[in-house]
Every structure is written in C-alpha cells, then in structure tokens.
Image 1 (cartoon, rainbow, N blue to C red):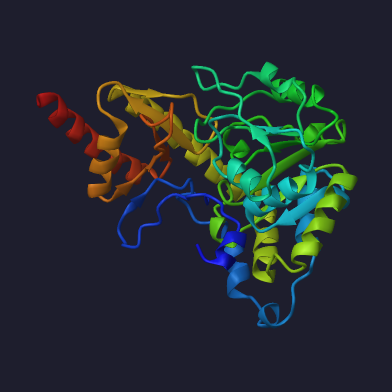
Image 2 (cartoon, helix red, strand yellow):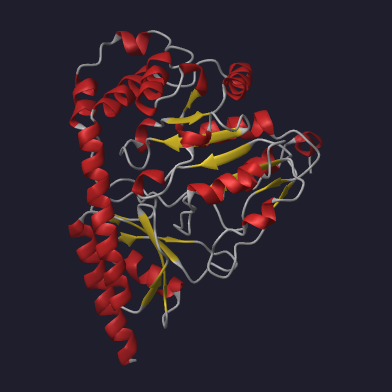
Length: 356
C-alpha cells in the first residue's frame, strides 16, 4: 500500500439496480414508474428559458418548497428540498446522528442506510424483522442515537399503520426519528400529520416513484422548523446550489396536476393487485404490498434461476443476494402489457421446469 492510500476513506458503496444499456427491454428492477410524468411537466420542459441554464438556481429551491408546503398543508420553514430523497436522507444522517449511541434500522430495509452510517462513521444496529418480514416495534424501545424506518419498507413492500409508527416515535422522543415514505402514495399510511406533534420527527418523500420523475432527482422532507434549519445549515456547508432550475420548475408543474397524479397511482395499484393474483396462481408466495413493486418467492424454483431466465428474455427484475431474502425477487409494477409479457414468460418457464 502506498503511503497516500492509507488516508483514503474506504466504503462499500450502495449498489443500485442494473441499468441495462440495450433498448427494447422490460425494466422491472428499479421501481420507476412505467408511465410518463404529467403533461404539464413536459410542457414546462418545452418552454424552458435559456436563463435557467445560465443563472444559478434558487439556493433553497424556495418556489418548489412553497408549492410543497401548500400542497401538504405545512409551513414553508418546515420543508427541506434535496436532489432526490437519497440526498435528503444523506443530509439527515450527517446532521442528526452524531452521538456515540448506535442508530437503529431494520436488518432488511433500504440498503443505503448502512452505507451512509459507514460513510459518516455512525454506529448502528439492525434489529431483525420477524419471520413475516415485519418490524418488531419493541426492538426500538431501547436507548439509541436515532431511528430510521422505511414505511412502506423496501424491498419487502410491507407497510405499517400510522399508529404503529407513532408508537416508535413516542418511545424515542430524545432522538431524531426519520420515516422514509418513498412508497407511501401506493397505499401506505403517512405520518406527516404527526410532524407538528413530535418535534423530533422527520418525514421524507420523493418524486421518483409516484410522480414518475426519477430522472429529475427531487426529494423533500418535513419536520419542525429547527430540524429543517439544522439540515439547511449542513447543506450550505457542503453545497449551496444543489437543485437545478429545471427540476424546481418541473416539480412545481407536477404538484399542480393532482388529477393526473392520482390517476397514475390508481393505475399502478390496480395492476399491482392483479399481478399479485397472477403470481400466486403460478405458485409464488407474495408479500402484501403497499408499494409499486411486489416481493415474491416461488415455492419450488430458486429465485436465482428465475432471475437468470428472465434476464435472458430481456426482462429485468431485482435479486438481492443477502441472507433471509436471497430466494426472493423484487418486481416493479410495469404497464399491463409489460406484466402480461412477464407472466407469459414465467408460465412457459415454470411449465418446462416441472416437466424436468
């Protein structure tokens, strides 16, 4: 090892879902929306003035923050806007988790949490989900340096009630509790209404899933004004111009088209519920989803074999080679046509498998 190499920070990076380079694939592995964003977003993009590229953007993304506050019935000083919810969560970890006590998050959850903890040298513990992949709230009653709960959880797709999450918040009022609601619009129960009640609660959401804007990188969170100001102080010590103007302007346009938003979410939920039945008919165990994906395991065929077969057919799903979930596949909900192609291929493969 060279002398300068000893001072390099070594981190095992987060591994996102594969982004296939070839065209004409069915991409059901990264939980993107199969539908385009609101036509109002497209219109704004077409009409962008070149000034939005030449000038620095609003440092606090105030126009978007104001629109978000109005939409959700919050005050502007209760909103923090970031470049995707990953940026928001990363800033929150850096801002709030600075004690010697370990932060707590489940052993099976969004796999960026442990990466941030390692990166920022935050001690952490991961209480195990039970055998049904559900959180045991009593595991979060012990002393800790902070709590992070994805609700609905990923990759399991399971959502807990507002009362359930509130119980965890109640037992942890001396630390910051982050509730990551990336998938809440697909049937989860938000705890946003508890923000005024608990000054230590931070609720994080995103435009990447339900608003079909993963490529624009828009994330945000709500909390009491002191939490939000603390995050802004860290943000401006790190990078004062994070969100670009096209994202701010298209984000505002998306919020204004509430009808389209609800129609697309309903469409995805309907396809998801039909897909659950189809999977079960083919011999899969399917967890009860409150997200835009399903977490499935076949009773006879190993997940790795199904994953490899589908990939050869240019259908991409997600497989996590991790303890307890390595025989499950996470399947994003696509269009009805994409799901039909998936099921036709699965049916063929399963029939062939049983013949042998």
